[in-house]
Amino acid sequence: MTGQQLFDLSVGRMGISPSNATSYSDTIITQINGVLAETFTLENNVREYKALAVLTTIPQITLLSETLTYQDDVLKNVVSWALCQQLAVSDSEFALANYFGDKYEAGKRMTKKLIATEIVDFASGEE
Image (cartoon, rainbow, N blue to C red; front, side, top):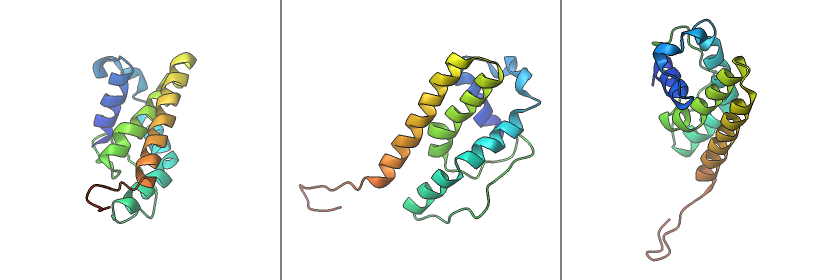
């Protein structure tokens, strides 16, 4: 997923067409980088769970066309909601920011829960 795709997903979740979201163009890269930093530990937890190499530094983008190195499920279920919250705050839409913040926290909880839950098939005795 690129920075642009993350931005489009986030503003879409806010009910805004990407073509009508030009007011965010001056700050969106900084906001994406901030959210990537905030979710860095969670991303590495997911990578460890999936037996993938962990990231040693927090990724930063300088262009929206750059590919984000986080797992798509983290980007879609956690990072995009955090970005929605940041954008709503920048618009002084605090009720929406609270809603998006709740979605962000729920995404983090669900991701952590999936990592921590080991599923056992008791019928076959396999993990």
